[in-house]
Picture 1: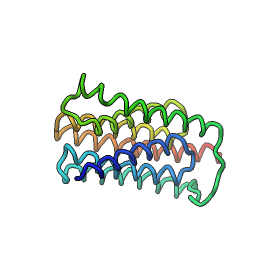
Picture 2: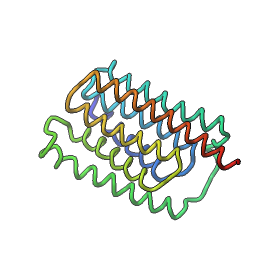
Picture 3: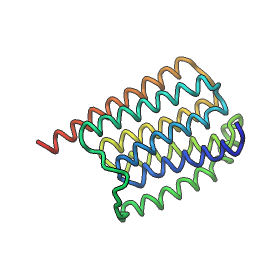
Length: 199
């Protein structure tokens, strides 16, 4: 894969994570999550064979589809064409997103030099960015969908970082099971949240 495509994939990956942190429009968030998994697939091709990378893509798209179907069945998806003004919270989270991207870009050369010499700067930027976006998202919102997206984003970043260090079939299977379990738990809590609001 060309260097330009890898750079574009990493940039889109961080953009998708930023959209999920900043915007509170569920159809857009699900779309950004799907894009995030496609970009993880393209970035991880640097250290994994296409077949092993495709497993992450398939699992990611399954997770995205599970969340989407839950939102549709609960009647919570609104059209992407609905225009909403940015709230002050979204402006604040947008500023934080820019800072997180900047920190991940500046931190990756230091991490490569001191701790992960076998990992490329691009992969480190993507993985550290996803980890920070996931942690920040989990700490700023209590809605089940955004908590699950934050957890999945954090886990994607950790998987990218681990993939650059070594390969273990057992851990790859564990990551797959954890991703699917998180999606199932998220779907359950989304449905419970809807039921508690309508009760």
